[in-house]
Length: 306
Image (cartoon, rainbow, N blue to C red; front, side, top):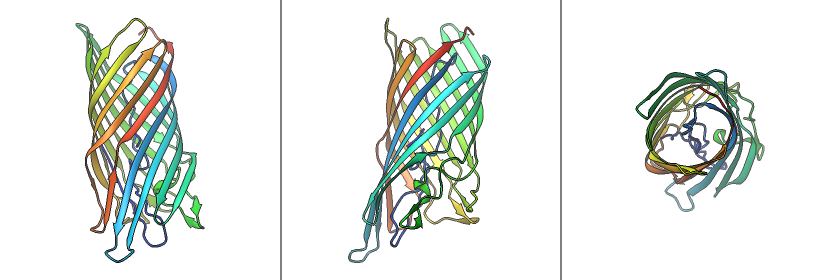
């Protein structure tokens, strides 16, 4: 996915396709990423790609199934600074989900569930060329994406739907420190999912990231290089208040990227490589995620004199 350590899994048997239902698999987790400029409004586009492979070995001749799943997420993102401390963020995603498996091959796309977030800056301190920022926020995700798409007259796997069909709530915290050219960022979020009208509820999700960064300043182009770790965890899903088989888990990822600042724009790209992952699967089932890719283009609209 997106955004960051994580996970959850839904593997369907029989004549239906095999597909993972992970918080990262469908990029349902949330991360604001490293944006050290706290004084500007901005608008931009963000892209995330996650790739998963699921396998089932039934132990019989011809009893092997697999699915290669790719989850693309393109988001319109923006921030408005209402005051020096109060900031409003929005995220409007468009998703493209691709499944290629032994039982089914399909691609589904559409508007995802938009999210609105309010952030408040509790701490801003500048001492001896160092800067400290501490913010916390809360938000809501609206069920505007379709969650009832059909494939061969059957309901498509839940994770493959553009939307979740539920109102969900997000809590976030972030801390940013910089002294001269060095800095680090700590960020966490917790997503509380509710039950959809169909009785399905995705497990709650938690993620945490810690990144060191180094800034190189040039007359016309500034660089910010960062690296660290990302953790994401998801609880088991439920359907009609019963636990869904093969869901829930967590993962740890190495995180690295580079940001370019020029004029009033920022261009960045990054990767997340799995270090360790655990999925609640049975003895016949295996699920693995591979390298994730993310990129964004941010335009800083107006500077405030704080």
